[in-house]
Image 1 (cartoon, one colour):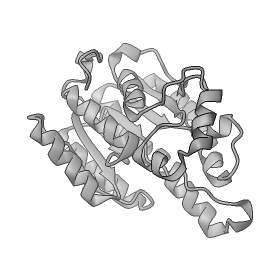
Image 2 (image 1 turned 90 degrees about the vertical axis):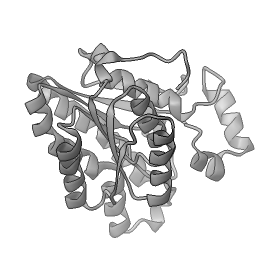
Image 3 (image 1 turned 180 degrees about the vertical axis):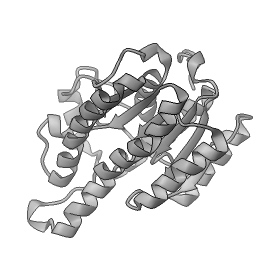
Length: 256
């Protein structure tokens, strides 16, 4: 964490559950919450980088986050991970539904099985994770759910229709859950990242044409990086945002 980053006292010892926390944006989210002295658990399908992340955080002298390997397409395993977190760390007060996969695909190649898999990877687990943490948040007197959307559908991008359909649905999910759980002081918001320079994005898609797109479309000409998204998530998890719910928080350097 940079020295000029905000410190949120309300996040100290708060139990946080992050999906897809082993790499990319999720990795930065886990690091930032640990730096706030939160009690962090995260799930990811990737075992080796996730364990390396936990060890790296532990080496700084901070408590290591609890890593639970999980394929989020297995809802029973996700529910079990959430229950394990409650038993080992306490009631979850912050849920970050970060996990997703934006693999490109052509319309003519999409099968029913592939479509259903994309919904399971990008949408379905967000609902069931929220469903599982709601009783814990109610018992704790409130909480914050941060779902992850995408500017891809807002910008009308092509090349991955199952992904953009799933991400558009996240916004509706956020609005509905915020209405249902507001009386219990549970806030639900969507973080909407732009093109974030994770290792995967740079390796697969950042070429000369992509550099031109950034220069032409972003109001701010610097590249977006995972910490830029993590810092917005911290704000939405903390009590500083206590009256923010049912909203989209776009972090895209002004592209959309």
